[in-house]
Structures are given as structure tokens and as C-alpha cells.
Length: 399
Image (cartoon, helix red, strand yellow):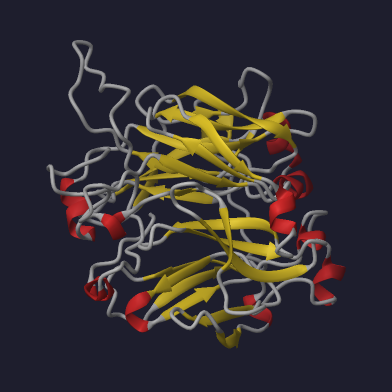
């Protein structure tokens, strides 16, 4: 699989190496959510062609694919036996977890599935964020119990067989709500965030649910080695729905940031790209390794898209590129880049989180890199490994 030389595993030795030595991204994977009655799929987007070149269709309807994650990352950069050749795809609508074989980057294939009944047996549902661990396991946050009420906890999959191993916290520990998470082994901590109860947010945003406390306002601090919930930090009324959370790249800096989703007011003038009006706003982000290109999609979650941006649902979403001036500062929308999900073969779809795929290897006579070349992605998290020295290694973010 991917190597920087014969003695390295996936990813990069440091954020600086990723920025200065990483190849330019050529492909992006993006889950596409289809209307009821159709199947979601994983789209492979060729960034040079600005079009979808492959679709891995899921076998079930109403999955609501959402986020994704790799089976291996920079935590095993020093292990040449490790390969980044699987993509984990939790479905927050059906509580399935799909595993895709991406050893052929331009043509992913479905490998196996963790079924919702397996999660229900552990009293969890609605899987969200995926991270690969230095131990080889896959960790996924979950947002609900088997009945769709709020329950924030985590499950573990075996990183080779992708069999469900159980829950991560010690005993029956759980937060009232779940969503995203990041961990920092140097400080022996994991911090998780809160969206709300799946039974509430799956039917749209209702102010009555906010008043009834069916949405979260806390950051949950867990002991990384103890696997226990140590502290809950209340962000108050201004911190309703703390969602994506990130630490700084430097593992010795005890700082991070989180975005809270509820209160914001902005009414910009309509923007058009290639004659197409942009609906909604940037939702998911994927930054290139050199920091010069920021890819964005504009779908959040299909029930909420239908509620707030019905025209976007009707027309389909878009992938856009924002150019980043790393010398003088500033952002500008690239008017020459557009991946339009309006004209998909079976009709418009909603594209959500992106996962960049960097292909290395020789080019053919036409200048195209071999399809069998292994994928890498944007900066992935530095995880705790079998060695104690992993605690002091540079941590890599997923953007």
C-alpha cells in the first residue's frame, strides 16, 4: 500500500511533511444522500475533470450516509505492514456501518457491513465520527440508544475483520448526547461533543425540542486510558449543539476549538458559479495538504436540508473550491471550479463530507496515474500506538 520509501506506513511523519512533501489531491470521496426510495452512494470525484467518475451504491435504502474515516492513518506511519485501503462509512439514518475496499482508488467496492441489529444489541445507534486507532481498532462515536433517545458513547471495530468488538467506555458509561470526538494521548484525554437525540433531530429542527432539552450543550471530557467520563463542560445557551471539535497540531498544546451550530444570522447576496445559484452555505470542508485549496459542500443533513433549503434538495448540491492565499492571507471563491450533483444519473443528490485521496505512482502515456496506486488523504490524527513514544509524536488533523 502507500509508502514514502520502503520503510514507511500510511500518512506522514509530521504536519510539515504532509504540507511540503504530500502530492496534490486528484480524487475526493463524498457520500451522496438520495431522496427516499433511492439508494445512497459513495461518489468518487475526479478533481481535474470536476466530475463524478464512479459511484459505489449502497445495498439498502434510507441509510443517510454522513461521515467517513480510514482504517489506518499517520499513527502507523512507521509500520510498513499497515495499509490505508479501507474506508469506513457510518449511516446515521439506518445505523449501519459500511466498509468499502478502496485499494483501487477510482473504483471502491463494498467489503462488508455492520448491521443495525448488532449496534442495538449494545444499546447504541446512529454512528457518526470514525477514527482509526494506533492499536489497529476503529473507533466510532454513537449518538443514540436502541430507541433513538440520546446516548453518547463509542463502539470499537476490529481493524482487520471489521467485526464489532463492543463499546469503548468502561462499564455502561455514556454522555447524554454524542456527536464528534477527538483525543489527545499526550494529555490522556478524549473530548466528545453533543448534537441531540436522534429521535428529535431526525424529524427536523423543532424549537420545542430545544426547550425540552433534547439537544446538547456540553463538551464531555473522558480519560483516554481509564475510558471514564471525567467531566462535563456546559457551554450554556450560546453553546447549543457543539459539533465538530479539533485540537491544535502540536500535541503538547492543551488547546482546541469547537463550532456551535444554533445561533447565527447572515444574509449574503446570491452567488452564482457557472450560471448556477449556490444554495445554502459551506457545510463540510476539506483542505488540501499545502493549505491552498479548500473544498466545500453545502448539504448538512437531509431532514434539515428539506426544512431550511428546499430548493437545494430539489436541485441537488454542489462541491466548490475556495482558493487560500497562504502568502498575503485571504479567501476567494474559484469561479472556474464546480462539481454539480444536479445532473446525477438518477437525479439530484445531497453531497456531504469529503475525504481527499492522493494517488502516487507512475503515470501512463496519457499522463494519468495508475488506478491501482494506493490512496492517502488529508492530515489524519496522530493516534496512541503500542509504543509509549507515540504520546510525544506530532499529531495530524483530518483537514
